[in-house]
Length: 145
Image (spheres, rainbow, N blue to C red):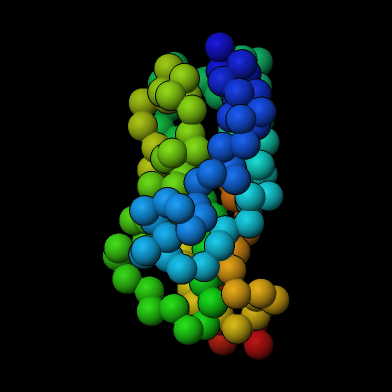
């Protein structure tokens, strides 16, 4: 059921319909999100489903902790509304069948406005999941320079 739903998401082009000039989220975030990021998210969901199927995740209904870095163009003022818009995009790209495998989704996202991204778009990087809580790892930018 989950794999059929995931294939439907890919076939209907859901990643391309998530955030564009015709959606309500465009009035909040005026920069595009590359659809490739959503296809990477679908691959991550597929690997989670496989791990549940093969029994490498021992919990019956675990909490799914999503982790990623979200980079905005440097001229974007970050606030809770823009963060919630990104969370909502992830929830809309999560299949309803996923909730048969998990009890809930928790987000550990690192939001940052930067000049390092090549185009004026929102860049989602390092999408990963875990089923156990751990403190989110954020880069120490002073050590990275």
